[in-house]
Amino acid sequence: MTCSRMTLLSTSLLSAMLALPAHAQDRTGWASNQDDPSAMVAVRIDGDMALIDDVKLGPWSAIYSRGLADLTPQRLAEGYQAKGGNWPVRLWSGKNVPYAFAPGYDKAGQQRVKEAIEIYARQTGIRFTPRAKQGDYLLFTNSTGECRSARGRIGGAQTIEMNPRCMASLTDTLHHLGHSLGLTHADQRPPFGKPWQASRSVQDKQYDIHSVMHYAPLTPDQKQNTAPTPQLLSEQDVRELAVHYPGAAQRARETSRPEPLQRGQLSSQDGSCLSLALIGQAGAPRNRPGYAPLPGVVFRLEPVLAACEKSKVRWYLDAYNRLTTDWAMGKCLTNTLSAGSKPTMELCSASPAQVWQFEGNTLRNKLKIKGADLRLATRRDGTLTMDVAKHSPDAQGSSAQPLWRWTPQADK
Ligand SMILES: [Zn+2]
Image (cartoon, rainbow, N blue to C red):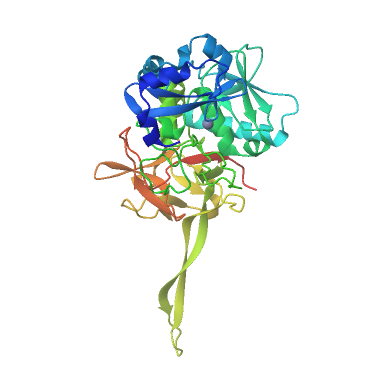
């Protein structure tokens, strides 16, 4: 679908198309936001299910018999204004979203769900808990077809249908939990963007490339999906959920940090971990009496990104909120004065350049440069950098990936 085609369809045509009788041949309609006629999404019918992309709207027959109440432009507009989504959704208590697995649900898939709900708890404060006796709950079920789920709280056992490929993917698991909390696809957020395409550059600032809410299904000629596979929620994902679940967001701000002295790994959004490397540099030549000077080499420990499986470095916050590790005794991660520069390992001191704060999953440094906060980030080339932390809720398109995930782990 293309936006240019969508803009040509008027609201009255939308109503006419949605009012097709249930037995009509063409079971496709358009849902839109009244404020923005370009903000239209295709509704499709698969069997008896009405869907937008991979989002189940409900049985087509039921929607039809209700006079398509959920899909009128009016309701869509109300939802847009009230909740930042593109149609109204019921929400959960952010303290307790019950979930369960259908019998025979893959064990590795269950593990992915547990990883994903840990990420939601840490980044958003929203807690998913195994179902006790609640009547409304999420039910992960096996699927041999496409993966799909509903937006928001539907009531009763609300299925999240996962095929083996989605089950194995942390990104897909985060994606469908995002729908169940009320998130729309990244390209359907205001302001409406264009759908994600493989041809889109990762530098495209109009699109939240770090969002777990991409919708990029495989086309018949594709063997592998080329969409990004973020392993954490993006800043925008977190912001949208904070609008829906403000109490949970408050909890996340208070708790999303490692316990002092608790060792663990710090992984970045692309899945690599903060580690250390011994880097040799040319130093002062060594003079030996009676001989020609030998070239000197100075080794220093530098913070680098490395594969998490290989990195044995465990970090902890000391009593002064400095990030340090037993692999560099007496040295602390240090912000080096300016945005765009690499952090270093220096002898631990009382400098604010060594004091770090976890906020959500952002790792800020206490040292301000010209009044701006700096945060630990990674560049696209996989190197570390200090990035200016933007406070504007509209801030987008940062070239750096600022999010960090703390995984407690004892030294081995
Ligand atoms: Zn989706």
